[in-house]
Each structure stands twice: as structure tokens, then as C-alpha cells.
Figure 1: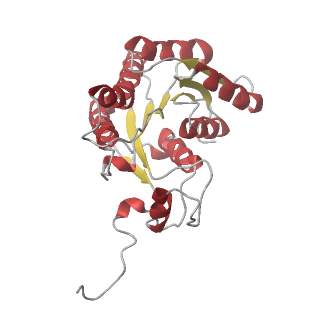
Figure 2: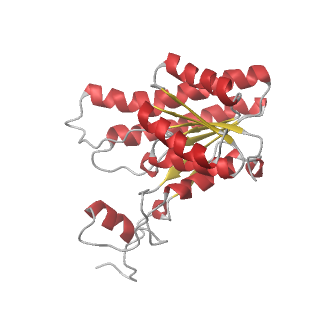
Length: 263
């Protein structure tokens, strides 16, 4: 098992990707504390996973964009299952709104959750790890949107580009302490994998399928498996990486026709 005798704090634990990460971490031997803004959802998710892994799952709830809640996540995690030596920041919000219509409140809410929330949990655990000489691992969930602009995504794309930059800076600052910091940039992740275009699907899904070399949408477990690798000693010389797990959509204009000459 990749993560035997490890303890992980997974934010956004009740969400699509966060829950899958918690599940894979548990399968690989870790104990997991699931944190989320929605207390009822995360309690339910933790109870369901805990039924399969008794004594290895706990949960906490709060707004990690608030310093006091981010600190409490770590305190409660340590009280329940021990000081985490893995942090997976899988929380995030992704509204869609044209730049000319977005309000200051909407803009700030995205950056507060996606960027400040990531910074605060990283900062809180890093301080504890440095004091305790723990060589921990951080995995931030970024997005393909960080490098690929799209209409309505100024605040979301901007926030995920900021997460990439934070990942690089934290890797530089924390590396001397033996702490590794990496990120995963997912492509389109849905609950159910889709392999064929259909009139019943949202046009965005059809367009993404057309431009995905592997020919399917992503599963939350595609991201979770990558997170387990980055959390493990198998990636012991990997830090500051932004791992693109997209089925190939990040590679370029994948659905352009080939031609010897444009007319």
C-alpha cells in the first residue's frame, strides 16, 4: 500500500473529487480526516467510507477561507486521528459569469475559497510540520482552466492560475524542510464517464469529448489515483509539479483537421 501508516486531511471532502481522494487514500492504507463547508454532507460521506474502513475516517466542517476554521481543521484532525502528514486541497467553487457582469462580491468569493482557502490550510499545516520536523506532502487541486481561458471563467481561471503559482512558491519555500508541494490540473471530471457525444449532453461536454485524445471524460478516481502517487514516496523527488490529468485536452487544438495547405 502506498500510504500505510499515514494520515491525510482532505478538504472539499464531500465533493466529487475530494471524496474520491479520501476513498483512494483509505484503500492505500492512510487514515483520513474529511473537511468540508457542508457539515451534513461531509458527515454522511465520512460515515459511508468509515463503514468500510472502521476507525480510520473522521470529519470536520467549516469555512477554510477563514483563518480560525483552517486552524481548527488541523487541530480537530490531530485530536481525532493524529497530526496529518498529507494535505489534499480538493475544495473549490466554479461559477460561470461574463467579465462585464461579474460583481466584486462574486469575484472575491471565488478567490477567497479557491486561493485564500488553499493558502491557509497549507500555511497552518506547514507551520506544524516545520515545528514537528514532519516531512509532509501537499497536493493542491488546480484546473486545466488555469492555462486555458474560456468565456465566463475570468475569476475561476484566475484563481486556479494563482493556485499554480502558490504551489510553485510553497515548493521553493518548504522544500528545505523536506515538505513537497504539488498540484493536479484536471480536465472535465463528471460523476459518470462519458465516451460518446449525444444531443442529450451539454454542448460543452460534446465539444470537450471532440477535443479529448483518449476519448472520454474524466472520473474523480483519475484524479484520486494521481493524488495518491503525489502523496507517496514514489514521487519523493517530485515537488512544484503541476500534473495535468486531462485525457489530453491540455495538449492543444486536438480536434483540428489535418491538411497540407490552408486555403
